[in-house]
Image 1 (cartoon, rainbow, N blue to C red):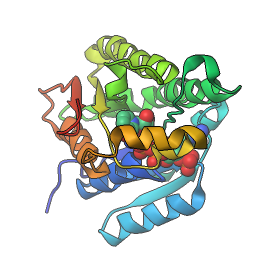
Image 2: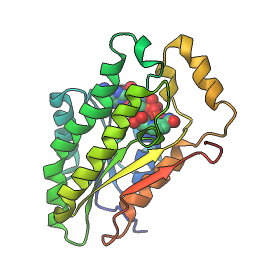
Image 3: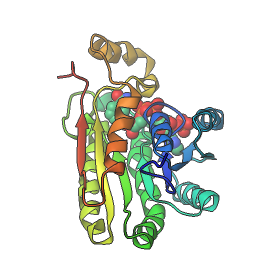
Length: 253
Ligand code: NDP
């Protein structure tokens, strides 16, 4: 059976867990060959096996994308593996919560490095390939999907620097969308609400209970719910540009 993304290649950053792993599996089910990018090779191998067990094709690419060289090399390896690149999902990210003034040295840098710089480096390296893919097959299009957050739309105490990075992702997405529009590379943002993943596990131990208490009573989204949103964006017909998708948990205020 022919699927919407047959013959295309998708690169997903942060594919070793959570939303990235679910998105890679979903795009593979739509027919894309998937390049799985993250640092934990064992977890990437598990996701690759899951993709293959469902009849898909995957390549695990171990990379730290917080350096320009690491990000460029990851994109190059994806193109070397599959010969083209049609879709990039900039999903890798970190959230380290806590009051701004109390943050230990290094927390802001970790978020800025992965949520902002990693996304920029991967996008820059991927764009020539995406432009080529969009031009080579005029009946298709190419996509960049940036995973932002409800924290890219609503700021709260305790997430100031995370808010800074995700508001930044939203602004960057809209500007790049306008730059890429004549070239038929669609640029979109997906803003998840509260999703049940490993994201909060990186928060300092003494603050983790408070974070859990804030969200513990609601039924969180599943990573597959966000994968569905990404699939909607990238499988939409060429005449359609889904610029932004904001998906909250139903119980989330
Ligand atoms: P996870 O912690 O499960 O996923 C984060 C992913 O980012 C991991 O696969 C991790 O892989 C990867 N990553 C982190 N640093 C690097 C790096 N330097 N180089 C390459 N990959 C890296 O959490 P989620 O799935 O929840 O997060 C995915 C995205 O969704 C993030 O951008 C997050 O901000 C966003 N989001 C999540 C929400 C939630 O409630 N869970 C809500 C809103 C947005 P590895 O450690 O193997 O490198």
